[in-house]
Image (cartoon, rainbow, N blue to C red; front, side, top):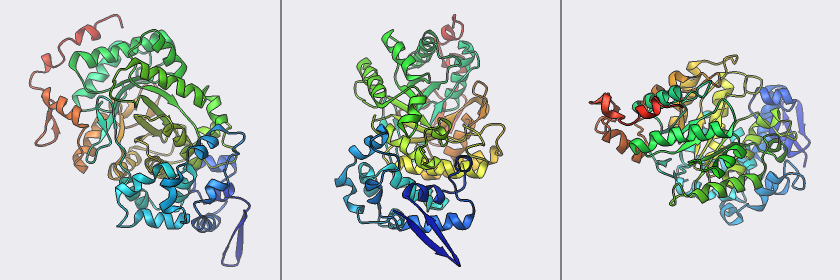
Length: 466
């Protein structure tokens, strides 16, 4: 279908839905690098006006990537819930935006839509939204998951404690874990990015986290963010894995460059469930994504970066994840050129994931060669807190010394909780109070009364061979 819009004395034409979506996308480096974005603002506005008039049902009739050649497209269309879609099936993209922002549209109504929405629908509506629209609508989409802690409840903000070390040194990692715990971080997961993707090393790191967790009965989860096949080998060797991690993208071709497909992810999930680390929860997966991943893998198929990112959420949704987050500024300025683009992309990703029914978090981050700084992090962090983001990262000093990028710190989480009146996950909050680290009445982290005995038993970990 061809789309046209007249602005002044100019007529703008868009030959198909895929190119209309790309031209309507707010400016970002990835689309310009791929030659997909609007060449000037007038063209972008024309495309957004056209997109607002597109019926939502058209996205079911015209896949942006061919059904026959892409298993992600097949997943999206084959699992679409027509009953859930029925309340909005006659709407256009613009009408859907108005409905989401309407006073009468409740969180319950938004949540009920999730199975009936496709990634392309939510990506389309995000392209015609302002920042405040993305915040308000995402706040209506509350997604709650449970393992040892409960993530996503109203008025709560969790963190992933990220104690990475450039040589996987156990003492350095354990010290960072203790630092984060004493500052109230770690209720979403204690998750390590290993410096080397070696099965034996992954097992050592998992045991380290698990010893710390069990020694103090901490209500959290462990994860070592190696490749999914390495984690599967670790499971076969008896490793104590709570959550299975994998980076994912929005097309079959892009996922193939990651060394994965849907069948492999399903096998990994079955393996994790068989461990019965928590027999009361089936949410055993943790996924990370990022705008530009499909372009970097030459697997975007002519689709803009933000829509490809939303398609990755369809992959995540199929596996009932405990955690999903966009690593929004990690890939670099070639894909998100500056702080403004990172802020916009982070809010788009959070909005799209939440509408699709995912427990969305965000790694609010940037690389050192990007035109961004700590002020940009503070702005996106605060906006995500207002939007109801499930969790953020907790990195010592906000500086990941293994991955070499800037993220959010334990202190950033304290800022956001204090400013917006947010609290840790309830089980973790109880544990913090039990340990004398937290004053519930004032909701403040405090120094422990007995710091020498607070983590009794942990010197064995800190001083051991690891």
